Length: 137
Image (cartoon, rainbow, N blue to C red; front, top):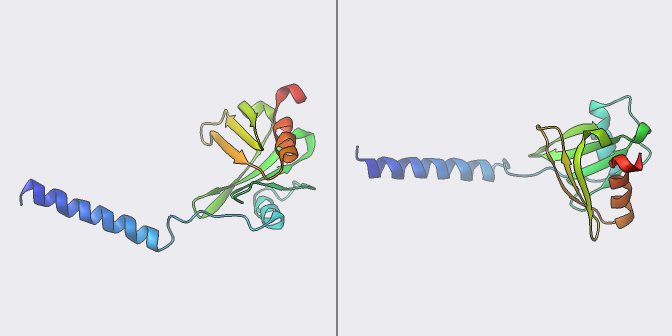
């Protein structure tokens, strides 16, 4: 078999696989419907933690749950599911509050470096950033 023919066959095979995964929902990102969905998802991993409030990002792919001792529970979409974390200011390498209501976080943990979180409310963004800032402790 000639090399150009082999390259064409492999390329078509890879493209067909990517299209099949996309068409069957493999590229769909999970989103939280509301604050109760975020609470349930978080409680599945941390049943002993309680949060009075839940702050959802505008796209519904992340939720921040203020906890006791200035810690924050985070529910973050990852593919078609979610992962949860509890973080505090000591876990943050860098945090920036940007206009109008964006919190950019870089965590020390190499397994999840952070991201840019867009909130509907500037005060909510400020409150989350304040909880995760060492100078506010």
